[in-house]
Amino acid sequence: MQASVNKDHTDERYEYYMKILVDADACPVKDIIEDIAIKLEIPVLMLIDTSHILHSEYSQVISVSQAPDAVDFALINRTEKGDVVVTQDYGVAAMALGKGAYAIHHNGRVYTDYNIDIMLMERDYAKRLRQSGRRVKGHNKKRTHKQDLQFAEAFERLCIRASNR
Image (tube, rainbow, N blue to C red; front, side, top):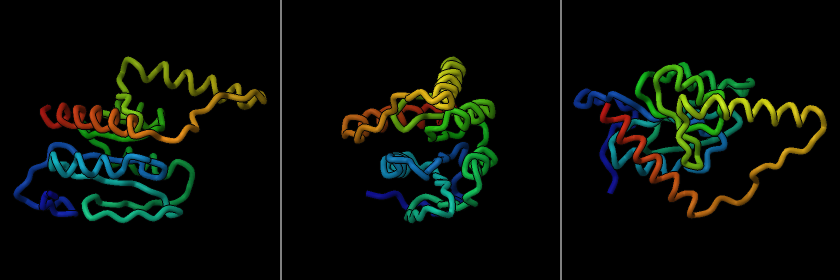
């Protein structure tokens, strides 16, 4: 059963204290995000660049330039304290945390002020290794149903925590 929520999320009967923002270009959990958002009646903004096409009956889809980091900056510019951001980009997660928002990776790992610094350092170290010609082991395995369940559980818990602020 789907909730009857205005797609533009401008229905004056509802006063939203938070929203969900998704770096949707390569996000494998968009459907899970929408299912939980519908259940909890939380508005969703899915941000993509113009090289992608995304249609949604529930989420507001925002298409931005293909310029480097355009989606990242558009997402952060729309992020407010208490929002939930879904991204696999550690830099975007760090900026969201800096604005007082919550952030979660599509694998279900919640970014926090306590773990983001080490993640950024690891990303920088891997980048330096790649630049020096070394190979860095990636995570190119096919996504599993178990990973989807782990994300759904962590994401719903995070949304409930954010909405109870």
